[in-house]
Figure 1 (cartoon, helix red, strand yellow):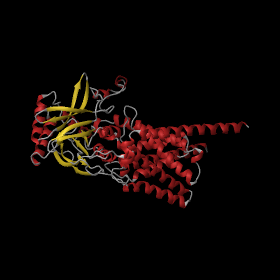
Figure 2 (cartoon, helix red, strand yellow; figure 1 turned 30 degrees about the vertical axis):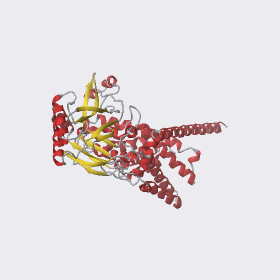
Figure 3 (cartoon, one colour; figure 1 turned 45 degrees about the vertical axis):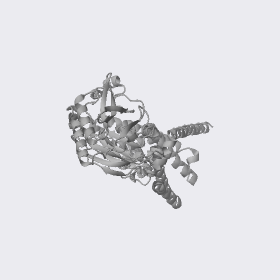
Figure 4 (cartoon, helix red, strand yellow; figure 1 turned 60 degrees about the vertical axis):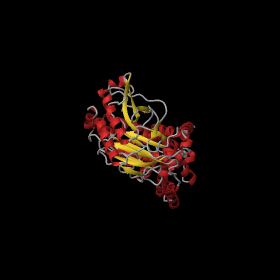
Length: 533
């Protein structure tokens, strides 16, 4: 009898774990390149329902399987880049622990007396609390430790969703909370249906639909307030596998030559004197043209042919560290101002705790020289050649496209468009580039700026302030495009609010969790006293 009971319990656990994994997979399907945005609130609704008013242990286990289901496919690009599963497994497990924390916190908060019951007030309270808690954990995951890892923010699955315009008002965090609230309403609709409460089911389901669909009516200003400039985006291309890409970067000037030739091709296609600015990707110069004359000759030749300044991605080595730079190269003048990446990727561009981790794996030494964060402005000022006046560009390099705060600084410092040079070569044909372009689309709406995202191998594209890709290059081809890009100076509501929404959400989430713990502790004390009497 006892054995049968244990078997039944384990069967139930396995069923719940499978359910949680399926919910995670549903959320993962919302991200590019699949882009099934509608699956995100459904998956969230499923995991919220599965962790409501259950024990800590049950909630934590279900949260873990939800995280594994969500992040395992989402972060597979790290295995492609490394050539083994170590980074993929490590990143997936670590990021899943945040969802374990959310699930355990929600299981406690959902037992608050004010959130219990079947009344409309309790249902609304549960939905809001679940969404705020999820937003708080996502904000924590996206900012801590070492600057966090925002890949997998719910907002970045909404690039094609009707709710995208809300990003201009709430930022990435606000859009994520809106999606989480939609999922919580789905959970309430399912709960009401199980209780055979038809009116509550219809109300909750209708509210879920309204939350995800209504923001399409929000105004998003995309008018070019300060005219346009003609920007060339150059994709020089390298081989389409991680190892072959590494080999290409190891052969001096091959990558630089590819981008120089693509720039010459672009210059031949465009009318003379029509280009204002040309953008090369991150690491497009495999030798720093500021210190290697052979690279400088190639860059200067390309800039002269284009008749416009070129933003050149290059790595600077100084005092046993390195910096990820984008340099303004003006024809006839050479290197000038540069932007230095503010947020290098931990374990991707530098190794925290290198000495300690070396005892566990020699993989840490694949990154021989640590990259150091830059300081200073998050903008570059370039002289738009055809327009014949200075233009300020907000900058972000590669993964910085996922950080609202970096791009917000650039916009606040006068950036009239956003430029994202990136190098996706080591990720091959994985989903990383598609995820990154989707992030750029969301950030265009968050900050009300056109985004020019330029990759060594793709995806390279031009995005309007409404998040629409108006031009895009075929990946893994040597090619270039030219586009008239609007310049803007006004700030979105999201940028005016700045970092305050994140601080408030973290504070409210922490307060909810603390209140839940205190209430649970108080209930346990009351039960013990009753037993004694």
